[in-house]
Length: 204
Image 1 (cartoon, rainbow, N blue to C red):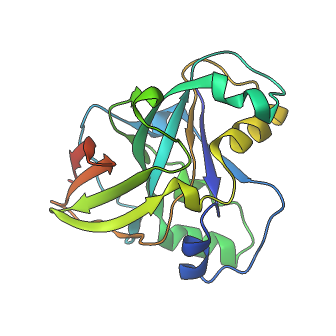
Image 2 (cartoon, helix red, strand yellow):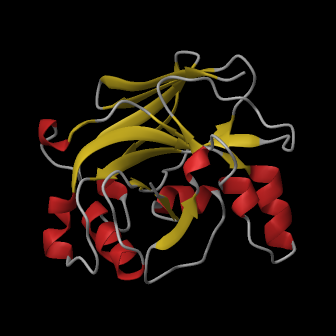
């Protein structure tokens, strides 16, 4: 099982991070399978970071083997979606960037990819017009709509499949909108697609 993630896919988030970089293709990175956090298990703050941020995202699950997938047919390669959190050790990421070094340690550490309960994509009218949000301690801290994506889900799948064979069970985090922020011990995180709660866990 592979975990793919897309960066810089919402203009609102790019603005809040003061990024002026514009890419003509999706910005892709990966997380190992040890990054997966599921089933409502708690997220333990790592001792190597003082500034771990949440990034709320739509996550899709691949349901068939695929390589060099045409965008027109990409919708056939996933049938389940959920909301997820791409945890980022922001202080480590900042340091690595300043040194011109890769920043996998800031994005791909153990349990940095939290996912909620998967639901059929057929229950939503339009994958590219989908509201999602994150509550922390019952206050909404981040919200977005997939219509704001720079690159659509189908475009992302087509792009990834140029370089990597997609397999059943692979996950794709599709990018985060504005509203990222830090988490702290005892925070209660709850993630929603529309009004359905799919993600529910605590920070320890």
